[in-house]
Length: 329
Image (spheres, rainbow, N blue to C red):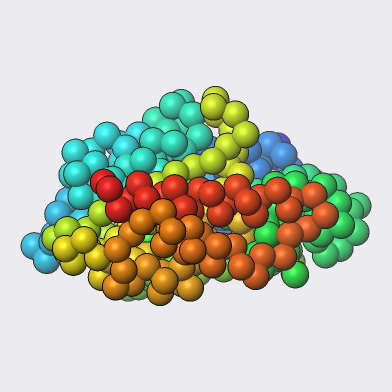
């Protein structure tokens, strides 16, 4: 790891200014919890010359309810805090569950929601410094290599999978992120549109622009009677990277589903909505047969690679079970 300059930012405005400082003479990055960033630095994949520490900015680690009813989660809020906050547990239980199943207790206590959403995708080729030095053939070597944990959808160009578990629940809840740039200019981007297909040449995986800071995550108020559930499937009961994870949010009208949102993670380069499955549930009572039909639709069109076809029946089962769990929540 090469040496770098460390700056403790005291405000978002200062952080934005430091990120865009033309006198920085090199590669500047922001750091929140630093879990993924420091791993990438130690692996020789990223080599910033200046790190802007965001954790010294006051007020970005708070959870608030806006007068409009929206729930505002500061970007420096830890994953552990999101899991334990009573408002999130009561109103957005799928997000609480996703946060509680992210990584390990040690990582959840240090990692922030902003950093979690901005982490790089999971792929052992991408995370090998030799790939970035050009010692591995250009393109995505996982397409014909070791791809057992890679994407089964949208994998023609790249098979890396997006690594955030809270993102799956946030997409199901139609959450958005607030990005702050120069002169206090703010952009609101739905989490569903925030993630970009990974680009091997630029390394860009999100819609955040150079010089911007992710400052808030915002969840809309939910209609009365909304039910939700989350499930993460791993190979082992102990800490492990997921095979897939699923979040289901059902807006109920009596015993029937008025609208449904189903988000699936770790099966595509970006989190994926099961739109066809959502249509199948709309206007219907949820039972085993209906949930199974929606689950089959969720995996239709999958294009597994040479070693990850096993993900398809697992994902189908997890979607079915999560739908049933949400309907009875």
